[in-house]
Amino acid sequence: SQQGEEDPQALSIQEGENATMNCSYKTSINNLQWYRQNSGRGLVHLILIRSNEREKHSGRLRVTLDTSKKSSSLLITASRAADTASYFCATGHGSSNTGKLIFGQGTTLQVKP
Amino acid sequence: DTGVSQDPRHKITKRGQNVTFRCDPISEHNRLYWYRQTLGQGPEFLTYFQNEAQLEKSRLLSDRFSAERPKGSFSTLEIQRTEQGDSAMYLCASSSSRGGGTQETQYFGPGTRLLVL
Image 1 (cartoon, rainbow over the protein chains, first blue to last red):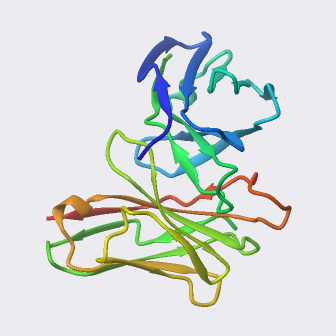
Image 2: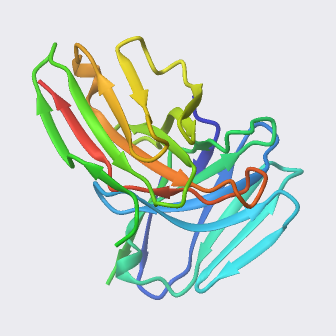
């Protein structure tokens, strides 16, 4: 079963605009990761935020985590056409030693040139 | 390129046939995962290996599915008597636990897309 709920399911913006995607989850986590997937391809890791962190940056990406609300957001600033992809949040759980990830259903982002 | 590789990239088979997929993880990674992804959904966990030991299997992994990692390096996923519902992308990922804990990044391969006719 999937834990994450992502919002919105689809997002269409113009190049240069910012894109914000949200992820909510149900049970306590060890970490939360964001991945990107281009159509029909494998997943590319973007960023990992630990449960004791609140915000993290990587280039044009900004991730926030609110464990009290069990939610995270991914902000892509100054979007480019090449950012067009599906974005997934995935949670890692402290109750398991396997490190397996539980994914949300994803947000499909389209950036129009 | 020393990333995760998967073979084949695409497989078309007839219902009832057996198929086997291979995953080669990043060489220094001791953890290996299999996930399945259907259209429009996020990946779902199937099974996990630490070195050669299979430590967890999802309830999604029916008796028709078997995975091995005999020498703690590459892994195979076999599906026996395939059904149309097995059509999906099968993704392999690897990570290293040697830093301690479970907070490591998983690196994914390109996936094997299976179509069962």
